[in-house]
Amino acid sequence: MIHTLFATVAFLLAAQVAHADAIDRIRETGTIRLAHRTDAAPFASLDAAGQPVGYSVELCRRVAEAIATSMPGRALTVELVPVTALDRFETITAGRADLLCEATTVTLGRREQLDFSLYTYVTGRGSSFAAAPRRRQSCRVLAPLAS
Image 1 (cartoon, rainbow, N blue to C red):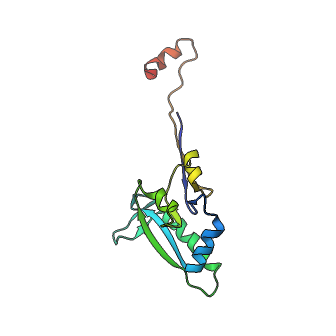
Image 2: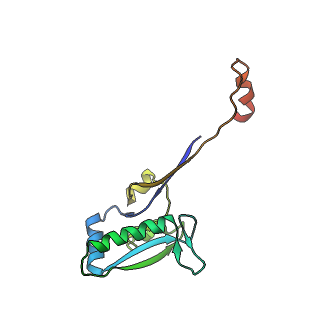
Image 3: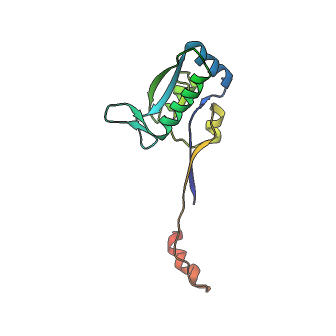
């Protein structure tokens, strides 16, 4: 069985809120709220000084920088919002944060509530074993694995 994890970041916004509305709110307030995990290294965790670091956090910071450059003459404040595995999606759908900086699996159920970015990190897991001799009995070699 192959299990694939898609790390998605940036603009995990409530589906009922259009992207334009979120960008407009960010421009109006001058603040972007980045939700991040503190326990999901190497994607998102805290460094020795207690600051969020990791692959996903860096991607979100770069999204914030891109939004800031689209607002000439205005400063953009980045607010960091710590979340847990249990409240991360609710934080976005409730409007307490604008972007979720973490690796998460995209599912149909989650797509009903959130909008996801393009995949930013893809990984998979599988099994391999030595090829059995080409004879009818080779299937018996695998029989113990089936139970």
